[in-house]
Structures are given as C-alpha cells and as structure tokens.
Image (cartoon, rainbow, N blue to C red; front, top):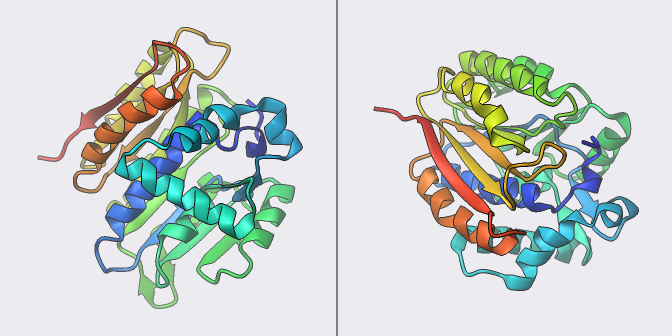
Length: 286
C-alpha cells in the first residue's frame, strides 16, 4: 500500500474513518470540559481530488464522489457531507479534508490538537495548511513515539482528562503493523486510560485478522468495539476489500450511531452484492 495518502484520499476507507471521527468528536464535545486530540499519522490534512495522485487511482469516485451524488438521508452521513462542503467552500471545489482538518472543524476554541507526520514533505505541507490555527501543534515525528511523549496531555498548567487518539498507519508492514499498533495502544492506555482511541485497519481477508481481534480484546480498556465496512467480499488478499476501526472507550451510544450509519454506507458504496458492515463488541463495560 502506497504510504502517501493523496492516492487514497476520499475513498471508501476514508469515508468510514471520517464519518466515525466526526461522530466521535460530536459525542465528546457534548460535554463542556476541553478536549485533547492526537492524530498520529496525520498526512498533510488537505487533498486536491483533481490532483495527479488522486486521479491516478480514481478511488475517490467510489467513496466521497458516490456519497455526494446520492446524499443519503442519514444524520451522521449528513454531518460528514456538510463538513466536506465546508472544506470546499474554504479551499475549492475539489478539496477533500483529511483528519486534521476534520478535527479542527469539529472541535472547539479551548480544545487542543496534536498532528504528527513523519514524512518531511508531508509534514511541511501539514504545517503550512494549519499555520493559522493556534489550536493545532504539528510535529514531524513518528506517531507511535508521540503517543509516549504526549500522553497524558498537558499544556502549561492545563491537564486534559478527556479526548481522543486517532491512529491511521499506512500498514506498509502488513500484519506486523497490528503488533506495533496494539503495543502502542496498551502503553498509551496505561498513561491516559480515560481517553478514547481509534485504530484504522485495512481488510483484505477477514479470517487473517482473527489473531488481531483476540489480542485487541485483551487491551485494558473498559469497552472495545470494531466497526467494519466492506465494499465487496473479503476473499482477495491482493486488494483492500474494506476497512475497520478498533475503538477503545467509545462514548455512550456511539455504537448505536455506527450501527445506524454503516449499513447505509454499505448500500451506497458497495461495489458488489457482498458489500456489508458490522459493529461488534469485543468487550463491554459492566
């Protein structure tokens, strides 16, 4: 999988991730206390879908392109489409917002965001895109290392007891990336147990993920769920047939939002009759 997200911006995996991210932000901001958000693999935060990279793959047409055309009447999807339109009002008709932009859009004036990107060119563009937003600190560094350095979050005398961590790695290491991510999640939970954590992962063949599910269920979070969207059957190891989110400490009723939203995404973005979705609890609080 090519690391640079510009090739994949706006595809079905981005739609899943970004619909859920906005729903999570809305759930967390329903309470007045300030939040901290850490985006560990932030990319550049803003992408032109008429650029060479996006046009080369055409993946956005089967994701945000199809969703904008059909505009299903579902609240969480409507929230996401409104955010995309707001981004285009600000940055042009072909712009697509990455997760840093969506965090800046959804969070409040007293919330804080740390966005990490290791690739120098991408990190430089990330800094440029958000240089006017004082809430966002851009770090050119490894996102997993940042989880150790920045959690628990504190800015000056202010400690942030609430917030989220989004982990969206490139999975260039394939299945080995799961080991790295789960180890980082276990350590981060020890530092900041009250935070909500979201790990995005690709799905080629779901049965290959069974060891990941078993290990994820042993993490020390009080509650853990997976949310998955497949646009075709998970029977090919050669392509990404769908993707999922591992969510630790989801807010109250967040599972209900996903359960109502993902079937609509599967119907809208599905490429075959085998398209499907699932929200599954790996662990539930008593």
